[in-house]
Image (tube, rainbow, N blue to C red; front, side, top):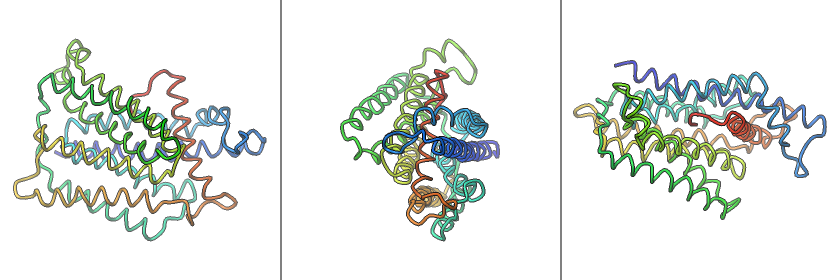
Length: 323
């Protein structure tokens, strides 16, 4: 029974640690490029800076941790109710915030520490209330619907985001979260996994829904971080990644809480989402403790650069498995 929760926690730790290491690598590269005067006309990181950030050992290790986190997250989605697995994984914000104190020189405010405490308490409530996960067995038509919805959200969302321009940061963050949520649903209902059957796996539309949702979600998150607040975009991502998949798991996939503990599961779920959003929101650049001599905005740019560089790695390698 402990394998599922431990797998989700490990995925969250991998994602959170990977994000911080990617930010560290990006910041080192950005400082070197700035010192050499190689910036864009708007003062932002150049393509060369982004590419070089992706070759630092910190960024490479962070990317490897993302791959491991993806695999562990996929396993957790098979072993746990989605309202629990998705929520625990989204708590990587807490891991990122705590590690940032040590590795990025960030000073967390009282509100942030309180939010972190709320998330941790909520996860305990969720783990205590969670019952057995649903079977995940659905009609093939459902798999086709998931693929169609993933295509619509990612392709249609990309078009809308491009039309809205700088006003689309929150929307892009929400759509990326929905993409990652669809990825979790796809992993749960995927055929040909247990028992393993390669032919069944390759002909299941859910597999391609996972690819579309993962790649599209990552792209839209990158866009959100470039055009708007890192914190607002991440908060929107947390909502999209947890709320809808959790509801789908309960309504259609048979996820359930322990008998008589439904109220505790609902309370834990709401507190976890609110707490995760608060961690992102209270981490706003204004007044946040950055390293000496570095503007608060530079931190946001560095975190955004980490995700941009992740996209560069993705294009160079021609594949990256999910967020």
